[in-house]
Length: 290
Ligand SMILES: [Zn+2]
Image (cartoon, rainbow, N blue to C red; front, side):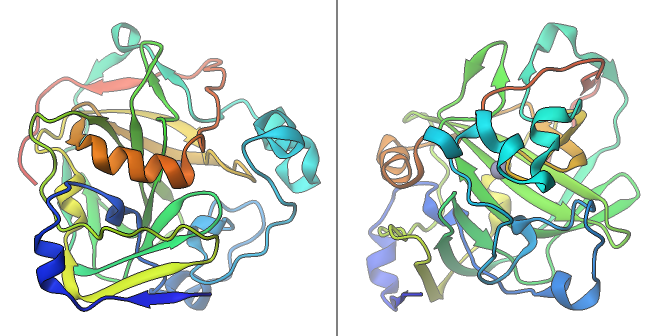
């Protein structure tokens, strides 16, 4: 693994790129999962999203050719849900069909951290240090990592966003909640956070900037209205039982940031899956503030 460090705060200040990479990133760190519990296979916690170091997949997979999404279900018996599951993600969110409900409010208690990113071959990922939490009503989840897909995996009324950020959380009892934020490249009000001008381009490469910090909550829209549904991880083994929290309001990123991310991980979106008999709920009241 190649490690790059950059101590130049000044350099960072000059980068007014908005969101970037960085959010994708931060490798490892907590190690909490591996050390504090040994999940059974079949548990959503058995997933590369929770590995803090090199992760060996049961079978190599990708987004094109014979390792592409249409073949995931046959690449390994452990990936069978990719073809047999009935609660798979992503899905097309049909906003007019979402059922309005009084959903529990979200509270994002994320904390600042050094900027870092790793290219794991499937996305650019940011791994969290312990201490950042999402509260969904009375339930608490710890933020484990976040990563991006370009274009978005979920579609809204049939349309992709330019990018989708997934914040992956787990509860102390092993439940998994993923918050999805859609991002569009425009110049309205791009997210203003320090961004590293280089991203890890090679698989296995990571970047850490200890001198610069960023709070992942900056990528969460201020309007906390959301949709929710039960689905799966969007990457093998496509484990089900995942609580999806889709933020209704997108964020803006600059075209420059989108171009850089796209160059490295563009096309890492699994096609939308059948909704089957699932229902999508939407907040009936608007929740603001972090
Ligand atoms: Zn994802």
